[in-house]
Picture 1 (cartoon, helix red, strand yellow):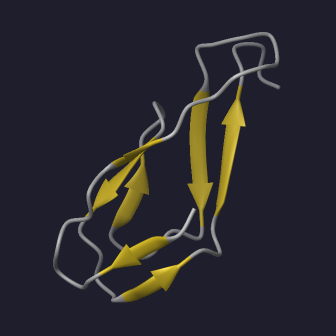
Picture 2 (cartoon, rainbow, N blue to C red):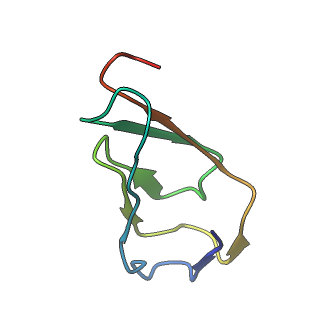
Length: 68
């Protein structure tokens, strides 16, 4: 998924969902998000970016209730 960020303007929060493995609850982490954005453990990407641009080079890791 591509994130379009405008410096100083909050993005519309994006909620990710997980499925498979041994089931939820699922925990989400991310690396490579633009500075100022973060992901909650529930899978919501939100925040106010400190840079502008189009970002699609980030990684989201989803962990199931067994830690897989």
